[in-house]
Image 1 (cartoon, chains in turn brown, green):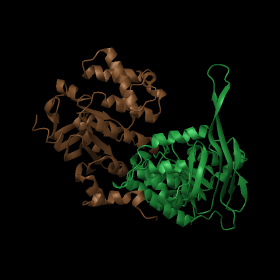
Image 2 (spheres, rainbow over the protein chains, first blue to last red; image 1 turned 30 degrees about the vertical axis):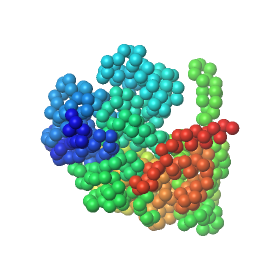
Image 3 (tube, chains in turn blue, orange; image 1 turned 90 degrees about the vertical axis):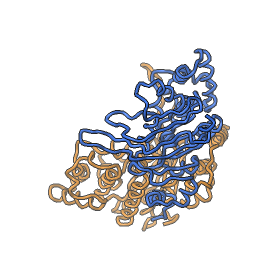
Image 4 (cartoon, each protein chain N blue to C red; image 1 turned 135 degrees about the horizontal axis):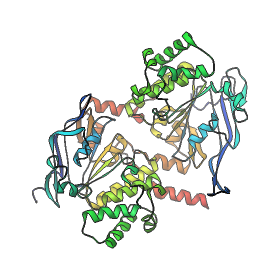
Length: 277
Length: 299
């Protein structure tokens, strides 16, 4: 255990994912490797179709048929549950349920996909607590209200009884963050968490993720296509293109002195870097 | 192209004065009474010179799309005037025209939409989509129609053969080019781009913006560019109008908006944009600052 503390929390080695469609095999991710240290933030950046979301889904084993992980390993060195080889877990494995939402949790681009429209906000968060921790219903309710306050919901005890459709996009994303962090995960995967939001809301949500990350000490895998978000949030970055990582390193060196031609072309395409035509 | 708002003969192409759109909030039940009105657009005024690009920025709900739609009479404004100069030199108030009077004028003011999927009819071929405006306005048919469709497709970077295919066969960037071709084929003087590049990846976005710039130079187009992405606006627009709660809070040449914003809201908005330079820290604390601004509005 003491040894694992110095090693990265998550190590992905040569991950390969293919989709076996009737029209042929599509290789979405072909040999992706990266590592995330405890409490660190790694940004996985790339354009649509680059394989960044498939990579993130693989970690939680959310790839659905006809997709399949065809190779590689995903090692989670959990402080609470020891080393877990995620790529080897069976679909019904007890450990997988412990990982999902417990040790590793995820927030999605569109908060409505993560929220049930027919349950109150509070009951959905409390459910996560009851699934992963030995708590009474009353304790779960108190913890939920405390968490809703932490993510900046005004009147958390009122919000507990509200339905997602009563909330704005930014408020929904706060609820999703509350749900993701209430079980104190060791790794938070955030898949384009602010892409659907306005800039001022985005700034608040990103700030919230940063604050809570510091408080809980969890690592963050941030999936994004926005180099601005990368620069402001991440310690390290991996640039993906057509299913492979073309360049990775610490944020400052990759953004200030990109080595790979694709990274350079992406940065040059940023409106703020282009000279007026 | 900085600052000037006059056309060649001294008059602007488009002059919007006191444009207002109120939506009633109705009560539930049988007797629907008006509980309140939402001032989606509240006394918006600006001018647009021929060949100019004006950016209309703001967050969701600020009224920028409603403003754009009122100008093109996709919805009817509650009040105000929209003076539009036609190619023959006449100036008409788009707000006052009836549907029938509006139809011949619509060819001069076109729109490019945000969503390249829902704005193209999936059951029409690209050729039919792009040629439809000409058919509706009875401006071309048969060989001539096919010829003009082919020509405009080539101009936006597609191929004449593409006219036989359906929208689903195209990528997001290509679909946006189809949308641009449909607007361009009418040889309009004004194109309203409503978040025209927002759904695209950065590299594709850059290509579409380049295309719009080229077309502007070639055909002397005037753009009203509705966007929420400040970075895009910064490099694409001559002037920028910042909207908040249905009003324009600041309108200035682009360089000045970004280097020397005057209104508190503009300052907050700019500070919230994540810079791709790790050494330029963004402002994570905009929530409190916006709350202060709202409180100041109330008092």
